[in-house]
Length: 176
Image (cartoon, rainbow, N blue to C red; front, side):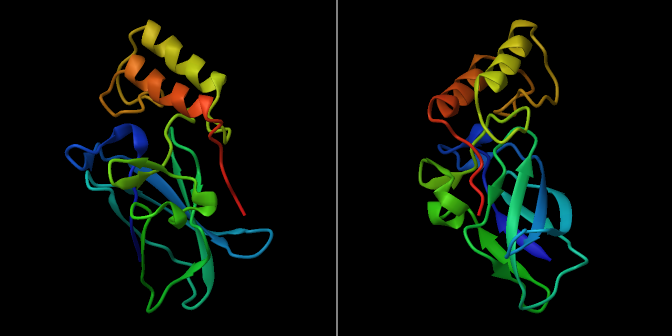
């Protein structure tokens, strides 16, 4: 069992220290080239960013990279390989930028968050992503959308602003 804390930039409110919970997929990857996927698990993060994930192919004492994927966020890797002890592991991405490979996190308030805005999941937040958000905002699209970065069930200028800021800063996946 893996328990970790992570926050999604777009849906995290530093004033209340909560976020809109959402589903994430977590991969365990070998800690050496070619970083093959060993196992994966899907779970829902709570409004505090806590998630519990179950894996069937874990070997205690073996180092794995943790890789987090979310529907509209940048894929994020743990900074180093981590290992399970007695089939359990805890990890907190929110307390330091050094918890993510390449320090690929954004500080919001006092907590570190995973960058939001990669709506097409190509590993970079760019004009393609902002264009998709803009199109949905123009059409007044609502519901559970990849273009809704803040979790309010609407694609609008708030979501576009988040993605544009990250696009201007050339945010992309950082992997070993």
